[in-house]
Image (tube, rainbow, N blue to C red):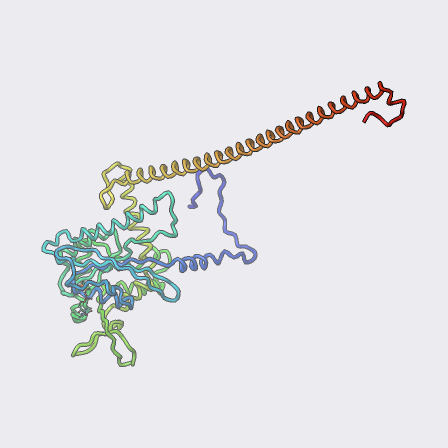
Length: 429
Ligand code: GTP
């Protein structure tokens, strides 16, 4: 069934094959290049009691010292409480950059009262969902720049006791199963014989099933149903599922094995355990599928399933007017209202600023105009004054001339009376 937008009439979808190459078949390449340019975020939570080889395992997995100097060592851990400690490293391989955060949970299962030691873990996972929801719900946002701090996978370490799951494990797994992809791991697997390990795995799976605890499924049954169950990929994944829970060994030291290769291994008086040897433990299988095959799927499942569940629950909580709170105890509706008010205030301030700039510009223009007019008036007045002075000077000159003319005429008349004109003496002067 095609999705037809509301109000659209006669919408039809047909499949056409263009006559020649158009270029949109390059879309996957474009998406790939963009993804590589942006890099990837992957956040891995490690839960388990102290001394199960968690740090050694993570360092072995990423072939680097993830914790570096920030690793406080077992003795430096806070007493009687579970801490959440996140370490972020930027890794680069063949031009692909990975922002890896390892979220450690020191103190887990080691408090005097462990009944609620899952709580800081659940709070942390919820808080990261909340952060993502807040950023995603902003009025102004750039989805490409949202840093994804949600927990994409949780490696849950079990002690190689050979017994069954503990109450603490059930309590914790129950609380986080719908929030994160759980991958159960048996640490320090070299402490068990292969038979013990097999038996232990069987017991763990039975316990998980009995308590209906969901763990990350490496096999995409939906996809398998759509395609074919004889697909080699599907079969490979099924084989992998047979190894769950993964029994792993970690090591920081190297040896040269019988084939002359330098490999990570643990050496004992009775022999060596090679970390990457699938005959010795499940490390290589887990590492292959976790990093090479499933990393993107873990990210997608986190987004599509866990985050969507959380978001839907939260929003329906809001819609029903329940007193749903964010991880720091605030009302999400009030947060949204506050954000809206803040945005409106920003708009109002921008408007006022623009109006102030406009008024200032108009005032400046008017002042200039007035100055120009005043200058014109001043110059006109100066010209008028000059004209008045010139007129006065001309008047004085005219009067002097008139005086001199009347004097001359007077003299001329007198000269004429005395008969000067008949003597032709040349005039009165
Ligand atoms: P905390 O930092 O206290 O939480 O411990 P952790 O679980 O991170 O364990 P860590 O990696 O610090 O290892 C504890 C000790 O176990 C170290 O001496 C490691 O050398 C050793 N160790 C690590 N991995 C293995 C393993 O697979 N088998 C065995 N036998 N020992 C291991």
